[in-house]
Each structure stands twice: as C-alpha cells, then as structure tokens.
Length: 142
Image 1 (cartoon, rainbow, N blue to C red):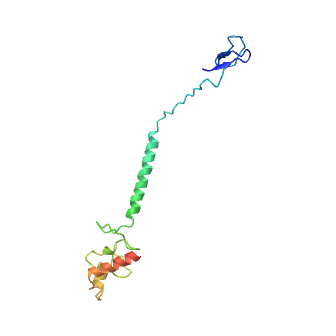
Image 2: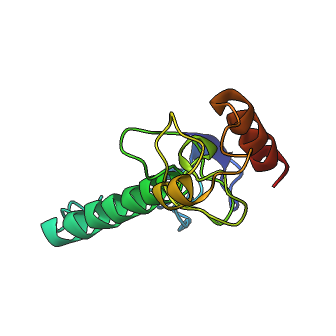
C-alpha cells in the first residue's frame, strides 16, 4: 500500500481509497499496485499404455537392427567371431585358400573339401601358417 496525493485537494491518501476521505473526490483504484494472480493447472492426463507399448516396440526393433548390422560382417563358422573376407561368408581362417573360392574350410586346412582332394600341386603342401598369413594380408588390403 502506497500513499498518494488526492488530485483535488492534494492531501495524502491511500492508493487503495475509492474516494478521498478529505474532500470526497472519486478516485479510480490503482490497478498497478494490485498483484495479479494467475492460476496454472497442470495436465494430469496419464500417458496411455498403448503409447508406452508402441515406444517400447520401436526401441526393441531399433536394438534388433543394430545387433544384426553388427553381426552381418562376422564369420559364419560356428563359434568364430572374426571379420568375413570380402565377398565371402567366412573369415580368412575358414575360407578356402584357392583363388576365387569362398567355400568353408576347417581351420587346420588350407583348402576346402572340394579343392583339397583335387589339387595336388605344391600350393596344397603349403603350410597352414603361411596360407593364413596370405589370406589375412589380402583381407586387410581388400
């Protein structure tokens, strides 16, 4: 509450007075001094269970896609987690050593079953270690 001068008699009066108590001059109430109260009501509408279910389903699908993409480049040999050779299903350790052949071979062999029995050249007698090294080098460059 503030003290103001009456516009008619110049006496001190309250800014909330409707008329001057000294001269009776009608006054307008001071609207600036009255605090304005604003009521805000928060929405308490719950999120529907269907919406929650849809959001969880979308998150699950995204997770499955991410996992399948990360596994798409992994060797398909049972229990192997190495990276596939280019254009093949298996890593260098499980891919046939014959040029252009991407068939599965056991880890302790250089060729797949098809080429192991048909190839009697010196390439077949090549040791596993050097064959694995050649395939690994080509895998890194490719």
